[in-house]
Image (cartoon, rainbow, N blue to C red; front, side, top):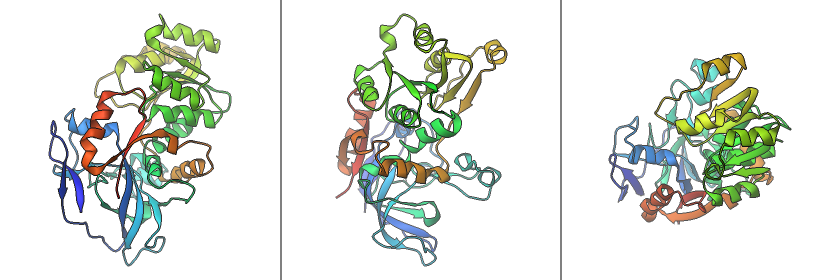
Length: 343
């Protein structure tokens, strides 16, 4: 089979012919239809963040596809089934899994990090972790549910706990942030989207933002949002991963507000300890998504309550994967999500 192989930092991925993987008794073999191109991959390629499995390794953690083979113990899938594979596989037996926090599983395995991922014609997955993908959801575009939809869903519903009528500031309207916007809107939040690219803000308006703000065009964004909201937002969700934007998001909150950090940064962030204590502010992290929430994400997409197909603004064949990564690096304001597709 063909696969895009990662050999180490500061190198392009190499599309090569490698052996098709073999499955075990409890696994399925999936012919990949689509795989989302995620900024996480750039952490490995450009920023030197190590993968748990030492290279060479196949990256790609947002796959959808068709089951082509099942292990002898697999009962819930058959050849020809359309499936979505989550970005992270969970053990089901550690303390965190047994207390309903599988997304921080002690023994988690991530495609394209701990094990070979889906920038390949075929990928192997445990049958227990896969999800049926309804016919109403386009197979290729449905791949982005694996991470670009599920991660914002967990952030909005489980960590931010957005309720109808809550004012929600979303910092960053890229591939993840734009879905924070549309999911927060879908559950009844009044969304204020913040981004320095007007093109991204146009997308935010289309996907439910009540207000959009370009901080480069405002003297003091904290004051602006506090004026809009009558004292500050209930919730701020940062989906960029920069200390300065995390601090800026925190500055938009009212007393008792909640900051949710979705964007990854390797740097420390300075926040006001007196303000956190005296105003009972909350600072919450958010990682990935629990398995129990994937069917909810799929149903929201199936019924059209959240958009999927519209978010995929670019499709690339596997041979052009480095072009897809270059587009991601370019931060093109008209590009939301790219996927790798297979014939």
